[in-house]
Length: 245
Image (cartoon, rainbow, N blue to C red; front, side):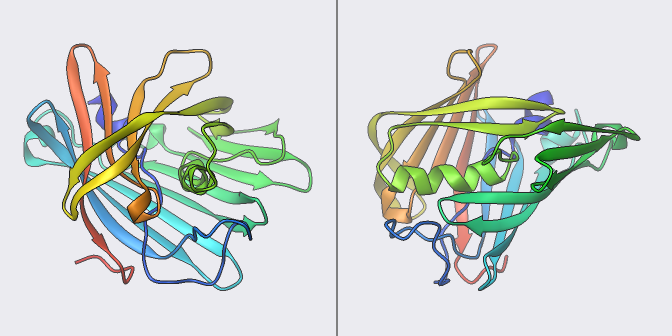
């Protein structure tokens, strides 16, 4: 269940009702309030559900939540319920996170909080009762904010993107590369999607993500092969008014 605990949060911001804040003037894509759910399976075995909620005000302040809930079958092996939150502000050309939290409801020792101090150029991490600081470069992201930013960069036509991400007490590099196009079945019909490979540091790609331009570059499917097993996240529902059913 390690994969369920640490990787169900890897999904991106979704599409919803119109909001006037754009990330970049030349990009028609906007981040908009939403709520949505994704199913998670290992081969054919349901593992759980990921629910996302994104809100944004007229000043550009955002709040992005990811709530992982294991299914009944997965619950026999692990009771991991994880809540992640990113808060910050949209800036011209980028997203500037201010606060990130990761809460494991079953194991508080796995929980952590990150506070971004852009004036001093540092991120302060608290985990397991220990607090430490480290320097960060401009445009460093957290685990959730990078998921919003990649959609906007794909909409601008970028084919290869690299982000610095404060993650697990370290600054890591995540790479995204457009690898081609596929037609993917979704709850909203078959859609042409960009097939994007994600890798970390100098490692080989570990995730394949399909982004639908028709849905403002919403990821409709995410897959990972691990130990001979196929893990898949798939879009099940999106609510355009920002409220969950």
